[in-house]
Amino acid sequence: MHIIRPKIEKSILVAISLPGEKEVTENSVKELALLANTLEIEVVDTIIQSRMKIHNVHYVGQGMLEKLKQLVEELEIQTIICDDELTPSQQKNIQKELKNCKILDRSSLILDIFKDHAKTKEAKTQVDLARMEYMLPRLTRKWTHLERQKGGIDMRGGPGETQIEMDRRLIRNQIKKLKSELKKIALQSKTQKKHRSQHFNVAIVGYTNAGKSTLMNVLTFAKIAVEDKLFKTLDTTIRQCEIDKSHVIFLSDTVGFIKKLPHQLVASFRSTLKEVESADLLLKVIDVSDPNFLQHIKTIDDELKEFKIPEKNFINVYNKVDMVSNKLNMKMIKKRLSDGIFISAKRDLGIEKLLLEIKEKMDLNSHQRTIRISNKNGKANSAIYQFAKILDQKVEDEFTEYKVNMRDTMFEKFSKTYNISVVINNNLDQR
Ligand SMILES: Nc1nc2c(ncn2[C@@H]2O[C@H](COP(=O)(O)OP(=O)(O)OP(=O)(O)O)[C@@H](O)[C@H]2O)c(=O)[nH]1
Ligand SMILES: [Mg+2]
Image 1: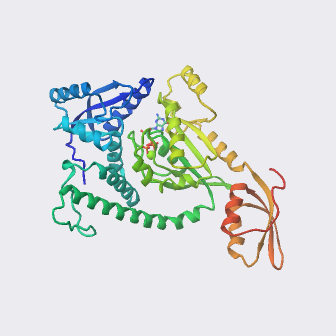
Image 2: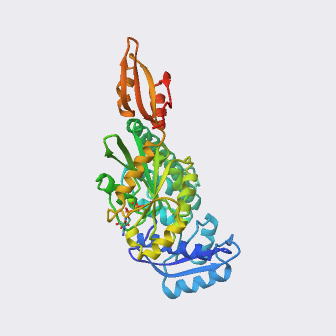
Image 3: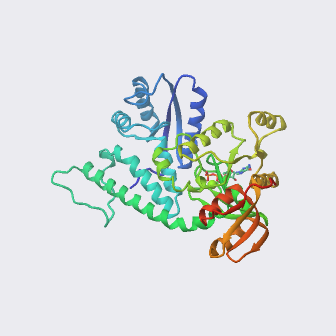
């Protein structure tokens, strides 16, 4: 199923600026142009209309719609791209007026980019699901004649069933199938996760194109593709990083965020972000060379809330300092930011400092404890070495008593995983 797009497509970007949001809208449209660019769509013109609110019926006002009609003809435009997600009826109404033009919105661009960049089965399934859910309420005659996949889809239609109804039914069936496939994939990755849950997990999060994968590569010698394109990474990659013998972390690179991420994607990518959910520490990567970095920080925090990720320990990682032109600019930037580590992942600057900060966070809340484990619990007796630094141990007939140095988070994981309830002495000496 494709949104049919010729190789070079001429487009006009359209946005509504609500009262007091001039600058926000201008920045948002610049980003929309980047999204179009990632899909190799040519942007011929940009129109921002100031309005009290978005027009219910056709997004822009009637007058602007007329102007658009003229422009489309004069400039031979094939595509109109609106900066907000259009309701199905807004899309239909604009389509009625601009007959030979394709009407897209920000969400459909993002969905298309995700489709182009999805590589693994999980990412592909998630994107397909999000696209189907986006498409379902928007089926019009233009969307019909969907490519029918053989097998698995019930093609029987009742007498008199229209093409659109049939397509809708096909999509609903596909959605069901994709959801159950995703469940299966999630089950498969559960075993791998269990193994990692014994370690200190660090997730790299941030706005798209902030340099997350570049940082991941620097820290772990991974070979993740890095490109000046939006949403290059869709799959979570996990690598081990040994800062030193007693500070080993599992680092995961994740899908980037963007303003107005389509809610269908948020829903279907939830499982990908499970790594973020279960992380002990987040590295929030922010591109400080981007003039909109404050907006990006807000978006990251909003999206984390949207994904219902509980507040956790984090380090702000301010990236691309090599792109900030001079000391004065750097000073201005620093003034606007809260605590964090300034780095250039590309030029390998500030990485040592970042590693030190990660170590410090790891050692936070590390305490000496005495834990007693039954000698019958072989698994726990061997696993404890991975969870804690053993200071002393005494083997008795029934149990072994360990004097350890252990972080609170690791202690919680250990006692939950191995059902350990006998703790002789907890939080004895703060390290
Ligand atoms: N100048 C400079 N460029 C950087 C730095 N870090 C990353 N980049 C560049 O920024 C672009 C995006 O980098 P990625 O690492 O792919 O960014 P990402 O956050 O993983 O992006 P997505 O996966 O698309 O969300 C690439 O062209 C990188 O080479 C840096 O410190 N300085
Ligand atoms: Mg990436």
